[in-house]
Length: 375
Image (tube, rainbow, N blue to C red; front, side, top):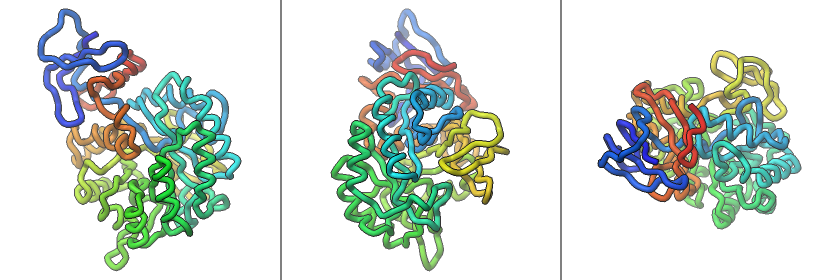
């Protein structure tokens, strides 16, 4: 089967007026020569988006640990343009995290929607000051034995974990986690600039939703934000217009380079759902006016952002061009956790997981293995 569009976005260039051949669910070739039969899809064919930080969708949460919920989330996020994702946990009891990892490990191969490419453990090794919507009762110093157990229970899926670098034993933990094939992110932390840089030097490579849940940039204490800017790490950004001012997002992009920025959603179960009352972990949440906030404090509690919206937002804010925006939501997040060998780009031999956008960057269709699954 051949597909065409005005533009086809690859990892390093954009093809104009090309035809893409798909065979047995894989991308086979690209050609300027017009085939006898093809389907014209629209303005832009782009790689399927990769969300490496998403807690839930369509009323379902990873921490519910309910049979079938992972599949419902995977199907739901197809409408967001996402074809690969890392189901993301929250700070909770060891037993609850055991169960979450076990359920994902049992079900990930059978999901019908976006493909599960790993697990992101967001916590529980954080500090209380910047706890966000995470429960401090379950926070502790990092334990490599617990990480080993979670990786085993998930059938090896765990490939990313976030910690606060000021916790006791953090540096040793980072080195041992990396040796296990787990990428370490830094977040929900009051660490000094120096402590955060030390963690990056030890092997941490991601800063979780930069600006949110971390010590800020001050001219005498550059903090976590300063370390995110200074180091050769990848910075996550939630570009919903609520978590980070567009000017602050642009500053981070300018300092780090857009090839070091991963657009993520941090979406919770209310994504794709009507306004109203929801829960995030143990906490009641109210969803209203495009935000999810804790009922008691009014603090932001994850987001209801769709990743396709983040791509459109950064272009409309004039802080990234279309090519950069697409890479920041596909290739860069995939690279951040070392899964760019299977997703994050349109490439010969890769699964034909791609999306179709119109000239306004609105999503027209989502394809998995060369088959239209949304739109």
